[in-house]
Image (tube, rainbow, N blue to C red; front, side):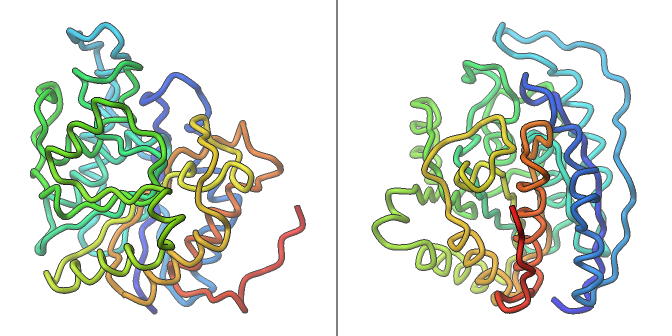
Length: 301
């Protein structure tokens, strides 16, 4: 990945859930030194600033729980349009509804089969019809695989559900479980990771990406990590990936040389402790881009 040009895209999306704070995420990544880290690893970096969507009118929906539908549709269009074709984009979020737009934009211009590694406690496979919370950050993978119920959203290339691996899941609603099983999405939950380790299922998925000559988008949610090491998220679920498991995932991904784009999502700096989570997310990105354990700086928390 050396000398890969990177484009940093601020996505201060705060409409996919009701707890505010994720809109501060892009600036937290900047303060935590994301651009400086990439430059120190020998990469060219361009930060295009924060994306601003068009003002959106409210959109009604039969599900009374749905909120901020018009704003989320507007964000989806704006972020899809911002996806570059000539560099490795890093979308700095922002809640996970930003992936509705980031991956739509990447899929529209992808010359090769697109695979998704979803590092998350949740599968985000609800539709606007099935979500009980009305939080649209729980819908991206359903939208991107062409599930029904997204008539308000712009059309997106329907990704093959078999090209998705959800790694680290430990909170799945019944409606999502039914839909995931019907679509045959590969879900590696924490029980499987506890029994077999995190490396074997990841390597098996990456072998499939390589065999298909695919390109790989990684969507890293803060709640993939155990809240003991990453408290700055509004959707904490105990029992997440440990510090070493998370870094191992990133190191294996770097070794594969398959990654072509990245989302960093659900960071809520308002809930952080002295920037601890923001710095950890930057350190994980550093491992993805080639920093090894012997290079990693010591943190005094």
